[in-house]
Length: 130
Image 1 (cartoon, rainbow, N blue to C red):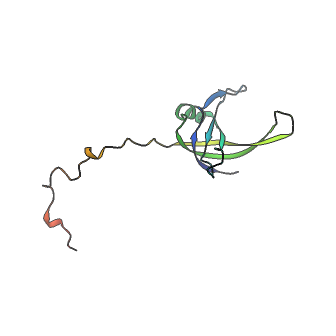
Image 2: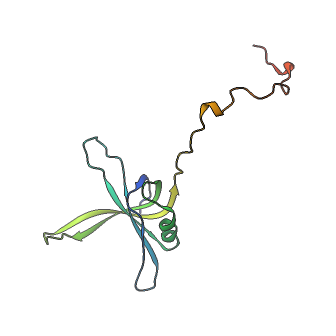
Image 3: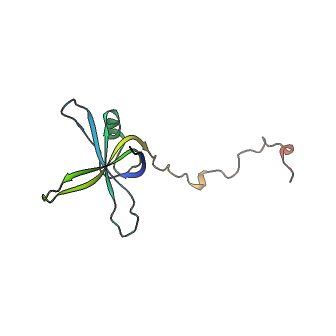
């Protein structure tokens, strides 16, 4: 068993579906990372969430939002479309989703006072001599 933490950006909107057997919610989404080298293509990873977490992911993860993913990394073997053997693909099974808040709008410097409005609350005896 492994445990991973990954920082990524949601690339495609999560898609919620239900299993046929017992109607368990499952959400799949595609996330991307910064490449290791400038000329490398941007790597992507399929993320799967189950049950209550699946509905949370579907509601809160929007494309373009930075997230921290906590869970388990797996390798899946699937047959190639051309019939030439199998291919391996990484998949991340999510156990927790941490949403990173978008940056707060900056307050213009002119709107921020540099000095307090009044100095009446300052006591000259509170000064520490050096």
